Image 1 (cartoon, rainbow, N blue to C red):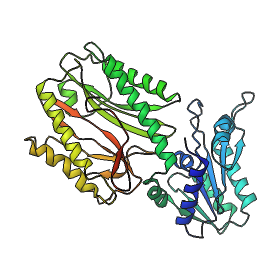
Image 2: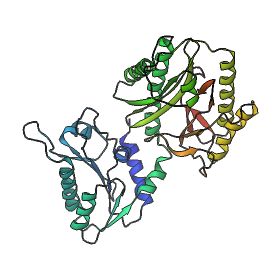
Image 3: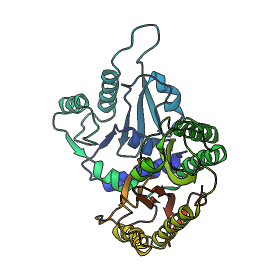
Image 4: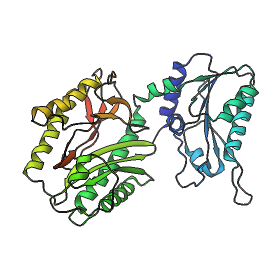
Length: 381
């Protein structure tokens, strides 16, 4: 989980990136509130209109504003102070969560910053009524969009973020282990998905948000992606299992292609070996300063060299963290370069009409000299 030291470090880094014109920062997007405070709204709370703010003062002190149904999670997070507003007490009808949140925000800003001149905000996330009320309350205030420095910061993960991703990877791997043990003819794609979700949830010991591709058979595998269905899998078929999940707000994203019968036939093994070779070629380039476009190129080059030119399409990988996908994007037209602290995926695939498809994917931390593979599954799951 995110630590107080990690959150304080990120707060300090953000403040260093901003001009002195920002006397306070108001964060609204749940990813960024989590990023700087470790606060995640509980999945058990039914109110879909819940609204929280994180206010960052110029001295680095953070104040979380959340509703009373989130009080437990709020007080357990890493913010220096919490302000809880009463939304619903199960005695009287619930009030407007948004209005209460905005009112609490304004009261806090007025008490702490009576002459506020500049506020850093995420313009795409700050509710309109909050922006308008801040402008009315502080007549000469300027709202400065800080989305870009936040996005840049998030590329390079801190130690507590990396540990959160490791936890997510371990839970994800548990899902693969369960499916590999249970997979067989007669099982449906939905049953495989349910097995993966249950195993990941039990491994995590915490609520998760999970999804992915669970596709079997020639046509569905050749398409490369798709939600699980009630399709019954047959002997000799493949299951592309691209399973991803979010735990404590951080993501893991892994993929394996599994034989429904438990054993790959000769041509399936040959093409899986091509994907392993392509992924290994891309892994050799994973280091700070490596160009994303060059890493991408390694994958189709290997595939083409094996006589399958044109059968690799889509991206070769992407960043993961608070979002999935996020920067850096390992695609043909990228101008991005890898940096120390990035966490990225590599996911070569082959998709052939009339034959089907295969894909494998792993997660990597970019270190000072190269990479660390965070996932420990072998190529067959």
